[in-house]
Length: 116
Ligand code: AMP
Ligand code: ZN
Image (tube, protein in one colour):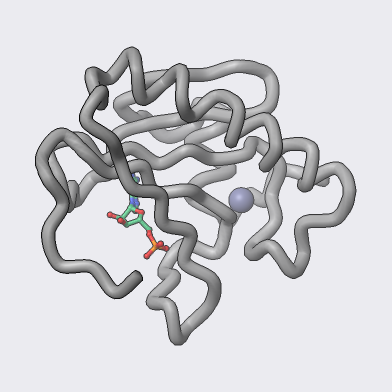
């Protein structure tokens, strides 16, 4: 999977656009959301470009698995001992605005209104 020059999260992953990174390894990067919806709001982003889970493929699946393994360690480091919420918007009806798969990691306060 190639870097997409037109994709903001590809460019963040490549270090071409600045971000407030809280974690990075060869497969994923995590950085603070520009428009935080909770005291802690981090986006965990596979470095390879694919828009949604439907386009993930085998390689992408490995990256998502890795992201899921990284998240508990990251949450601990971010002080989210009380818990946290993950959100992965998929497509227009979910309000996905950046078409590069990302996992929202939200916490730092008891999270209120929820639909699930
Ligand atoms: P979604 O609606 O699930 O596609 O979420 C996209 C998220 O990316 C939103 O919460 C935005 O605030 C966030 N976002 C967009 N551009 C940036 C950026 N350059 N750095 C950090 N977060 C961003
Ligand atoms: Zn991308």
